Length: 88
Image (cartoon, rainbow, N blue to C red; front, side, top):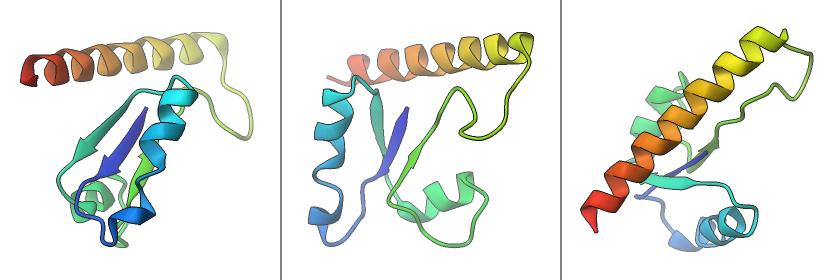
């Protein structure tokens, strides 16, 4: 899941991100502000986008924990898809 801030300036910094997400079949959603995205990511520095992965890039998780993360991730993606489809 890719979360993209909507108030990035200049916009050219992130215009390619949705295209890359679509090509890689990664769901994406916009949030209003880069500051809110930073707060959600527990950092003080504003961020233009965050990629949420279902497995760590380093180390390993036990299979039960991996399945729980995948189930939670699938639920979040389904909720976001439902919200965005009801807006349009």
